[in-house]
Length: 334
Image (cartoon, rainbow, N blue to C red; front, side, top):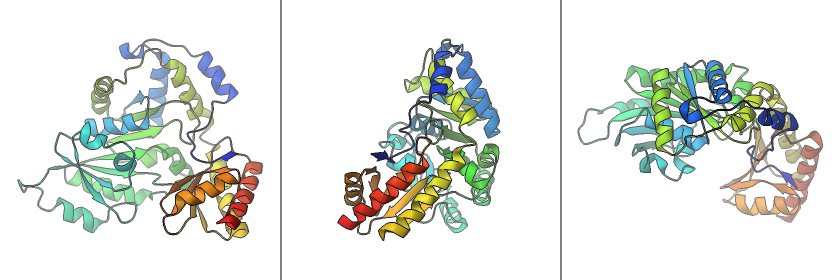
């Protein structure tokens, strides 16, 4: 089986395992784990922020982004398909008690939308806007940096904060040929993942100014995210950060090749977006198509009108060839 369900499925490489086994550790709740501190400092530096906080998951990193920016009952502006909305079990309203105001068109809000939402903010009948939310990448699509800066500029002119869900920021950085700091520029807080794309076994981080990260550290403890000798897992993330970012272009190239081969061989329509390939499944038949792919040795995820195939560091050129042929065989059964 060629497993393309997600880039979170990778296992630590032998070199990463050695780094984890040899990691110097301490009690991170007491701020005494040197490997965690090193990971946080290096992450903050790469993102051009004052500080960063290591957390167990991207879900927690995002919730802490809300925790430091939104008071109970205030608005967060986001896309209806952002991870914050569809993949975090309603934590936005359960934990942060924030009110989501959602848009559905495009991958970033237009000026017209932003202006319409900020109008009447002083009306006592409506929730007070507090935070603008973006993702980069967004379902594999790269948000152009000028669009990000347009949105963050609007937010700051109106006294709002801005958060970037950068779970796959490393992919965006690769695709844009920009530094991570350039992708993170203009955001008050940024979340990044060390397992998606990079191949670490555990962890994400929230980065921002020192005060926000200090408050997020208290929020992490509140959510039960305090970790003790976490350097064992932080070492895997640190190794991935140092050794796996530059190779991500290979994932993008393989995704493009997989999409090309599927289009040529199967009669189906496939589109590559960074390290993802979306195979169209008309009529909301994504799950049925994914089941057909699996019968022919290709594991993907059916999402609405598409099957998502995600290329990662364990996938080889031979795997791409086999996956394309498996999809072509599945297409004959559909």
